[in-house]
Image (cartoon, rainbow, N blue to C red):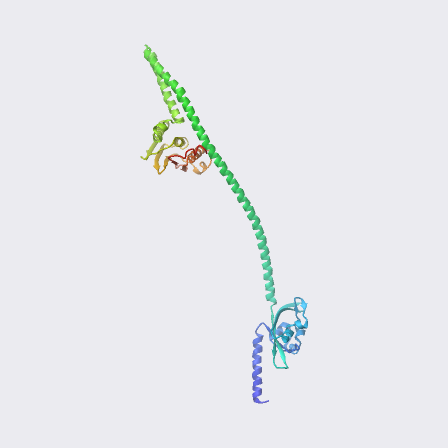
Length: 409
């Protein structure tokens, strides 16, 4: 052997040594066999994989050192990746199981045939232990299946909950519709009661005016005639005293008639009726009742005038009896096609939210009735009040109500 040949051999050995070190540093086990499966060379990783020393491995058959299965079944010789690599031009690749005692591994094997010469062909196999990865994938799959199961169960629960919620919403809608229907009926009854009350007051006022008031007025005239005919001054004075008392009663009766049915609403107009109402409130209750109004015309029909007059009268009565007010202001104004009325007092006030939504035994029927009667005209009522803060009620109503709208409700 020449020095040059020796040098090349040494260089080849050095190169193979470096390659062996490099291949031993990777996880994949590299095996080089001949056509019969006899191992010619292997990396350190293959030593660890089969649990044998390097000397025990070299020359041994790969089939004996690393028996493999596929899906739990033994492989036929022609199915082994080594044989497949020898027969075909392409690489043979697959995933296999290998058992060594109680240990079971999952291996990915890639085998490639290498034609070194016309007479000699070898096979290089790259073997990667993917047991841990496959176990992790299996665990991930198990967790995914658990998660899917939980999602399905939770979805089923949500569907049941959603169905119950839909039923509750539907029931709530039905209850709300029933409540709205009751409120509509209550408004209609309130409007009807208001009209019945108004007609009954007109009837009673007419009977008082045409009956008792006329009788008393005639009696007063007859007493005055009789007093002039008597010669005794004492008798005349007594008759005059009785006549004066009858006159006072006639005035009281006229005031009662006006309160029951203020016929002068049509004769004098709504604003004049408000002036009379303010004066009567001051005289009757001994409080200050101020009336402020603008100069704009306020044309109202009979029903609207009556409802607004009764509403203001009710508010004045509330201010005196419930609010214990000493000062009440009535403000009238016109805006566009509406009339505005504001009644403000300095009384004790109340919690408005408790008495204006629906009638109650605490005294809210009057305010509720006012709101519903004005609403039947196509108007609105806003009530602001708080304990010890007085009360402010604002009424807005159309100057000309829709014909028959509140009668037909």
